[in-house]
Image 1: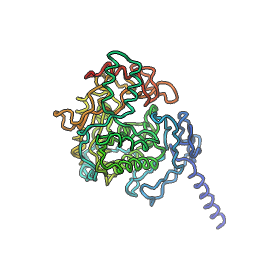
Image 2: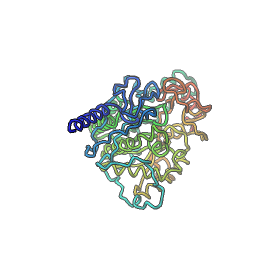
Image 3: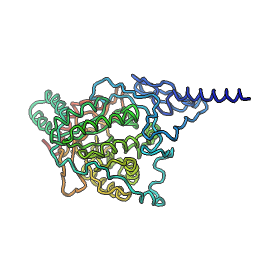
Image 4: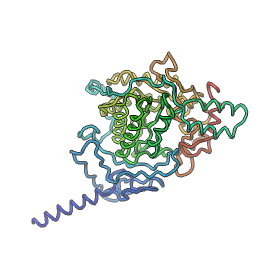
Amino acid sequence: MKFFVCASILSATLFKLANAACAGPYAQCGGNNFSGEKCCQSGYKCVTINEWYSQCEVDNSAPAVPPTPPTSNAAPWENQNPWGNQNQQQQNPWENQNPWGNQNQQQQNPWSNQNQQQQNPWGNQNQPQAPQQQQAPVNNSGSGSSQNFFQNEIYANPKFIEEVNSSMAKLDGDLKAKAEKVKSVPTAVWLAWEGAPGEVAQHLEAAGTKTVVFIMYMIPTRDCNANASAGGASSLEAYKGHVDNIANTIKSHPNSKVVMILEPDTLGNLVTANSEACKNVHTLHKNALSYGVNVFGSMSNVSVYIDAAHGAWLGNSTDKVAAVIKEILNNAPNGKIRGLSTNISNYQPVASEYGYHQKLASALSAVGVPDMHFVVDTGRNGVGISSDTWCNLVGTGFGERSKGNPNPGMPLLDAYMWLKTPGEADGSSSGARADPGCAKSDSLPGAPDAGQWFHEYFVQLLKNAKPGF
């Protein structure tokens, strides 16, 4: 009998070890340049999503076996990803080419060992019968800056200037003269590929005393509800490494002024996205945002803003948005945020976005997060167009120029800012990264992949600019 018991224990142990060597539920298991485990835990099978990405999904042909839970005494930021860093992007650094990262997220509060519930992350957060949620103290008191660094002169990204120059070579007359003026408008610097942390120093040095606006866009399983900009860091551990590298570079330039905007669209997907690809990374994304706030929001020369999508997307969900932001801040004990950014890569008018800002500020104040300020992307909202198309929308134009404290009648507004690089494509309707959202009748045809320069779109923005150049 003892022999059979020992043999059973040994067999179970070997099974668990073999199973642990394979990718977990909804984790990456294949794709171009993928070097991690290409098998899935028992009960799951590797399903090809596209040439860049395959993931472990439930195998309905076999009995599902639940994954082995993480040990309860794991260090809160210990890397539990069994397949390590999958950094493999060796392509054009200005394109969003990194295949989807590992979706195996650590299911714990990033700052404690308290297991989080694996259920709908929103629950009944809008229900009045949960007063303790509104009464709980919210952390937003780190040592990070509370200043509006947009009041300072803002740095103009030289990459944008080079892109405009490439279009000017194809223009003449009045349009060419207008394009020359566009080059002086400050635009944000996107940190969106594996090599981006190594580019931070050169921007800080070139900016001198000017404010550099960085957009962190490296969260694992980025753009989980679409395909055009899918990618990001290969794991939470890799993401933390990118954050730490960027922070260390900023610390080595203590006289620099930095605005750090965190992860466009992530909050919107946390609140509204119902796809399995998004639901399975909710905890991962909240942990990554908390880590970014905790690190960048503890630095005296950095003002941090979390991206909050736009009013047409989240305007009816501000209570849920506030609840998620509260959770993110409470899991970032050393950090603080100045506020939120909105309208990145979208076309909403300033007036309607400010209405969203007011509503969101009120919802945040109600859960213990007062005094929030906002930045609105005005790069492509010069023309008021009513459409739910987000990709290369036809008829748009440049909007108000980047400027701090732009409107005395809007005291919550820190700045107009060209955050999305206007003239770069939102995505393409063809190729490996084709997105159906870019094939609509009111999307400008012929676009390259997301992040690449789209000359025809730049010309449209220039012709329709309001105010004009």
